[in-house]
Image (cartoon, rainbow, N blue to C red; front, side):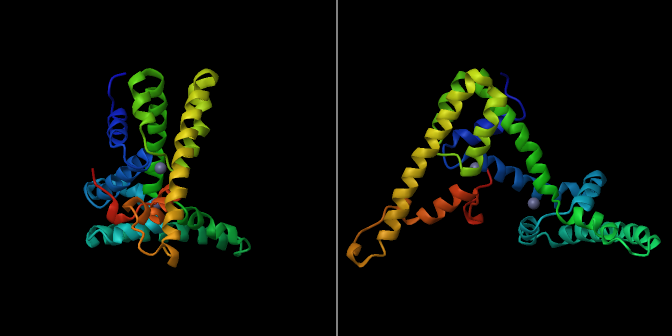
Length: 240
Ligand SMILES: [Zn+2]
Ligand SMILES: [Zn+2]
């Protein structure tokens, strides 16, 4: 398979062999999306229309607040607030015609708009392509099998998603081996994490005084949270 717009970043993420490669792809998508929204997209009326309609979730607003691009953020907020005013005006007009008998009519667009996020939607869109390409690479590039098996782990969410999608993407013949490999990688990492978290806990026991923890054991709580939630401390996020 020729390298395409999607296979190149997949190969790059997997070649790092460090952490969950799908989280790495996700963080890159997240970083690029936020950078784009507060940068080049400011001059793209189509994108502004989408961000005005969809808005952002709490965590993405928080990241944007910390990005030191307050004017860009304020301009997107200005047009987003204007859009919401338009939605509310339209709904209030409709509800008013019915004597405000139905609260649903007023909360309709606001409710929908409050729960959407342009960045989360964009990530989901690209992730979908990444999953399809990972399975395509698995089917057509034997050398990708080795790279896949060399991953230290897939986080809980991404392991579950890979296993979930495998039968549909690979069919009855190829999916069992794929599922077995993802389950084995996950099981091995769970054992490793379990041992390291236990060593961390034991180090607080007075009977263990003097025991020096390895750095993987010292960071065991952070590593476990990263595996369980896909969350990574912002200070650890690389921008590759
Ligand atoms: Zn992950
Ligand atoms: Zn979001």
